[in-house]
Amino acid sequence: MLIRQAEKIRSSEITPRDVYLNRRKLLAGTAGLIGASLVPSTGLAARLDAVPSRYSTNEKQTSFNDITSYNNFYEFGFDKSDPKRYAGRLTTSPWSVVIDGMVNRPGTYGVEDLISPSQLEERVYRFRCVEAWSMVVPWIGIPLGDVIKRADPTGGAKYVAFETLVRPEEMPGQKGFGGLDWPYREGLRLDEAMHPLTILANGLYGNELPNQNGAPLRLVVPWKYGFKSIKSIVRISLTDKQPQTTWNMQAPREYGFYSNVNPQVDHPRWSQASERTVGGGVFAKRKETLMFNGYADEVAGLYAGMDLAKNY
Image (cartoon, rainbow, N blue to C red; front, side, top):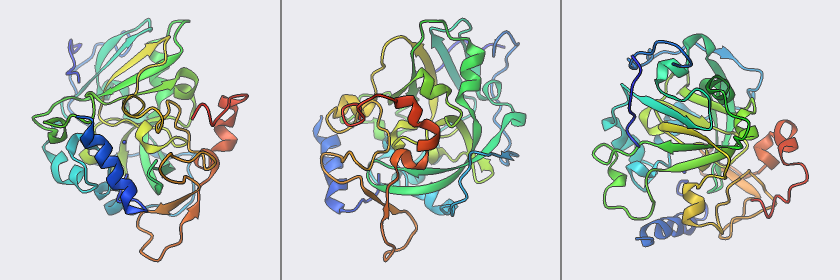
């Protein structure tokens, strides 16, 4: 049965420490699918079977413990440990996602209507936070473009907007916290959304996505800073106008709409030329950040002719 309504429903201690504190201060101071007969989501199996992807890196993967205990998910609090501490209370089944806007086949769908187990791929991607730390994460998911194609965008659609769940009774960071305007919002150009590297993830390390990592469904755009990969998605909207995005609304001089990983364009308060690998140990050397997080061969063409300092 078609679900009629959905509930409306961005890194670490960083180096140096005061960058992280400054960011916290900034926050605290801004007081059918497609014609099918659909049924409510009953959740996916805890263990997910996925085929390896040709898009995966062979770099050493970050440990499961680090990936799941070192997160930015401000809906659950400021500290990196808060998402793991508090996200267990989040109810992720049933879950519905609204697909609307400039599409010929709008609707509200359960997760299982969007992602079939037979479609799943393991994508081992570099993950680079705007706070200059990084991981290598073995995501499981499907290309976002597959979902968008099924929704059949109209000819005028140019952008894709996303929203995260708003449920303050289960997401304590949404209570009494005026730093962000909920829901968390993100957006991509349509060609970015349709690029084969862009995925909707529902798992990592072979299992269902943990709540603190954005269960049950999150975006992963590996050539952009991590805050662009919005978590716990409840709405995907096609539009002809560049959508508002949370961090760009919060501090437009610091967080641009594109937010492509670019070692040549520093954050106003710290360098983006290098990064710290999470789990690398206290004496690990920082490594040089790669343009587009190492995915330049695949995605640089999307920005041909653009000023990437102006369009940061």
